[in-house]
Amino acid sequence: MKKYIYIAKGFLLERMVYRFSLFFNALEKYIYILLIFFLWKAIYKSLGQENLSMNFESTFTYLSLATAIFGLFQTWVDWDISQLMISGNLSIILTKPLDFQIYMFFKRITWVILNLLTITLPVLVLLKFILRMPINMGINFVFFVISVIISYLIYFNIDFIVGVTAFFTESIWGLSVTKDSIILFLSGGIIPIPLFPENLRKILEILPFKTIYHMPIEILINKSLTIFDYLNSLVVQIFWLFVFLALSRTYYKLTERFIKINGG
Image (cartoon, rainbow, N blue to C red; front, side):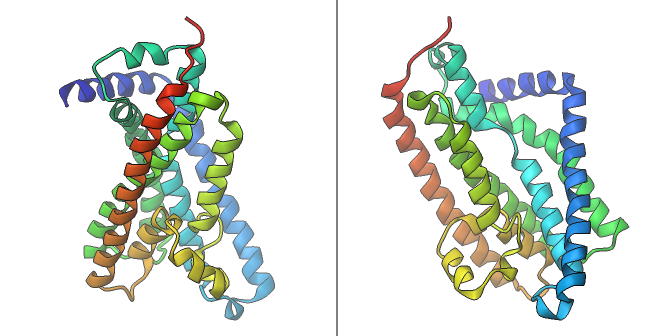
């Protein structure tokens, strides 16, 4: 395990060199949250708050948190694997006594740490203490943190599956964009799930996507939930985590045979 920690430290120091990249990545999310505010303000003014199942403050908080979590998870694992394949540097990594999936996890966990400090925590502080939005900070916050960690692990495994697809396609641009779009939409990252039509919400109940954004956010902002509800959400998340972990490990073994080393 020590070797993976050293890998993470090395990439953390390397990432901190590119401070402007960190700044503009965070700025992008703040601007998006500002756009969310004005867009949904206009939607509520047009439709009327009584015609929607959530009030404006709850909707804005929900989508701002979704943006903050999306920023936290945005580590480009799939793109990194694709670039390693195209450049030929993948061969160097695969000759080392490392588990490739664990290597990618520790390499990209450095992005999560920096995204947490520059995006997620500032957004939480802004929403709770400056804008006074409806965020609960009791025992539910502990469950929220655990839920976000599990959500990231699910997201990482999905990213890894998309990334190793590059072993036989090389380019994953379309697949990666499609993956992000599907997850964002079906997990409540673009429109809160409570605002979806009832029939669609029932379908989403049996799909894994809500475990990524919706469940952690609900734990943080839904005052009607009990500790039993929190635990139930974690159980569902853990179930899907094991499903995607098994899928990613199996898929990686299947795609290894398609590796073609380019560059040199």
